[in-house]
Image 1 (cartoon, chains in turn blue, yellow):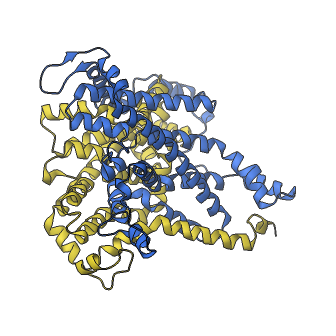
Image 2 (spheres, each protein chain N blue to C red):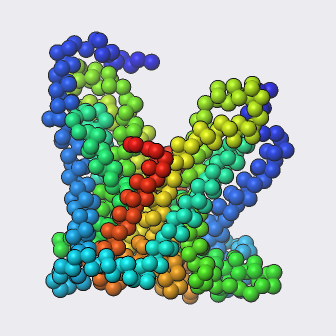
Length: 308
Length: 281
């Protein structure tokens, strides 16, 4: 397996090794390789975020001067009913979305490992919504759920003699629909992750269990699922942080409405900045969202006892 | 006999196949539906039931979608942004991963953690300052306005994917290169990059799907009609024609999906690997 170029450590003379050591571990020769990325990342990601932090302490509409306001924007946030609703909606969106995608992904992946044929085909099919833009997905569902002309859902309801229902204008349903459509788009990713993990469970362990008299279901419940626990935990971190940042479906499908029934923190901050021109307050909400994401991940890490 | 027991019994499998088929149908139906609906004639769309199959194949909707909107222009914009962004991201990300994983300078772990912070914070936190800065230097409504932020925000994932792969390249291979007199840059371009080819394909496909579908930056920085990308153009088009011309709307939706779908069907292994590795929305 050794390539022609291959030399083991012992074959490298100490002098050359020491030179390489200085060259590679000393830091001098490494910086041209990583500095461009670090500089670009700092200027375009880190500095703007710090600037947002500064702006959040000012009253500013973008045109006039900036007036220092201390924590006034944050105080306003606490008493703003729309923000409070957006925050609660965000938590519901995250909780429901995480559960839906995790269980959806788990069920789909478990079903896939049960069968002997068509696994790759099915995996491909399940994953299709993940490669389509959320704008396209939102527009498709907006047509499927439409009242006039009736989309598929309302056509079926009418075919059974029911009254058509304006699903997306129903304040009780809007948030749930937004959450489920977002989950529909992304569930395939988690199916793929769990499927890969389930596949990689050591065959010998499974065979040993078989010899000990475990049937297939017992293998699943006592061996396979416990063995992929770490993967499920990691995916939960990805899911929670992804859902907290959720934006597209709510913005495109319902624009946060009706009223603010499907407003998320991200859609509210976007409207505050770019539609109302309230830069200071919008920045404060941005800071809140960033902190919320970091805190959520920190809590999850603590919960799973990860000290990375 | 042993192998048989690795799977559940025949009867159970039959039920499982049926459930899988139903879920697959639910998963794929909205996409098939919009494709079929885009082929219906205007009369079918207004008089027929929305779940019926089209009676024939009618391309008039596509003709109208292309003539009433800048779809071609949007396609071009999305392609330019995607291609340039991917090239720049890899040009910055691959060497960084190489330095972090293979040159192992002091503090390389810290550099990695610093870059990975980008996966945790929402891009919204940088949106307003970028918008203001781009306005000041006058690059809103140019390709740069999308290439710059997309490149920077996709960089962490790119470095992460490359670093994960480069970790497994044996050090001795690089040392051999150095002994043969190759410079570090030559070792990187002649040994490490060619070995990382699969990762490069993964990074390209992963980034392509994300950049092509990106909404927030494009919606904020590209306001002039001819600079919009496909998702934004599609959104505007539906806003204008959504109620009056369903056929053209369906066609525009299909056109916006086609490039990523084609890429997916050719490279589905890499797309799946890339998305699974970086499923940070």
